[in-house]
Image 1 (cartoon, rainbow, N blue to C red):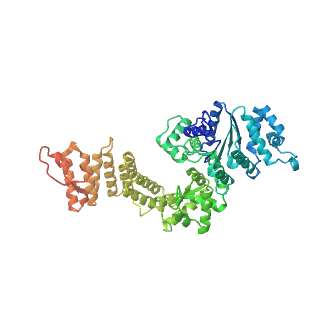
Image 2 (image 1 turned 120 degrees about the vertical axis):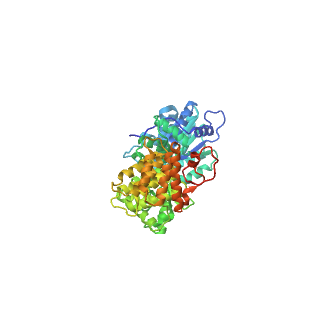
Image 3 (image 1 turned 60 degrees about the vertical axis):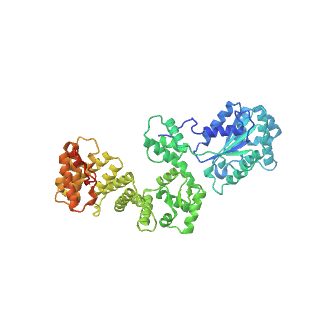
Length: 578
């Protein structure tokens, strides 16, 4: 499905107002600036903003001409955007340009039709004098501006040839009356050695030159853009996915919406993003691929443990990637991609075998303690390296860590991952109790409010239990299922399930039986108050006899309900009965 586009200007009202105010468009006040540099990352919306600016200028009876720099590498034509502007002015103002060309005939050599490939070359007296070109173009703009103010737009100056940059320096330093100049460039392309980087700094020191940095869209504006591109109703999860992955970049948003939620970076977008890697050397590209495997963020220590590069070589590659605006470094000693989608594109571009090999390297580094990391990181790398035993154990550990810090939703996710791996692994894992894992997963799901999912997990584990399976395993699963069903509206009878669990666990471990009796008492509820009290007391006596103090707390609600009207005296009760 192709990417979607919209001509609406969304989320850029403040930037448009700033440009029109600075340049004196639609206002009687004098212009605050004669030129503005517009910077921003690729796809952030600079062109859309400049299109709106041009429309605004035309509505205010200004004249508008635009030229574009092209990515022609070292073979770029000198003054290419100004050739385009000259061609437009010759078409719109033939009389004015004719008079100027008579005075400055050398300017005619910049006409678009004169620059096609031919056997004639300029040399000696025929060669253009740079000073004459600058003066001639300034005179041309001044002559056109006598009719009405002129807005000159030069786009993509990060691709500008040296002659174009010099021409811009001339126009910035020698303002032409009635002419406003706007120059756009990709700020993420201006690595430290980029020739435009120094000139932008020089231009900003000139009086009358302003700069506008186009930032990513805010989350609310992202939602507005998504609705404009995809008017049908989207779920909140789909909105959140777009907001998170696109990072406020309109081009990324359009491509992701057009990809119809495939979950992968669209091919056209991936091609645009991967261009950032083309200018890197092979060692730096290897390190960048390693960072893409690590995830959204990776510490220097972990990279050093996984990489086969020496310290100096690794640091040099990281420095190159940061200078090229592919990676960003934080004070915490971590690295991340400047755009998360760039990381996804790099990762998707890896070969399957390469991807598994790199994930296995992370598993080895984390598992052997050569680098510090979390159980969740180890589980992720082990899953993607197809190291299922390590992935199961690490997922369980990550789930327990999440529960320990009050994160039942995250814990449930880890436990579900572990269950899926247990069910699909080719070799049995004797140290993993799948039934205990299912119960623990159900507990986390209930704690996070996903009770129906907990019921589904428990039923699936019961269905997988062999007919000759241990009564203890079945009893515990039934206890957990009855407890979960008590929290839902269901046609099933939690009371019957809990009663079956009690019968299966009689003669089993006292703690399990006490828990089953407790759930049975809860299932009897107010409709069977006397029976519920009797069962609760059985559980209480069993807990006291076996020193299970964690199950006995505060007065017993069941006993209070069984004796209405009588004075309530402090009594012990089982946890969860009331």
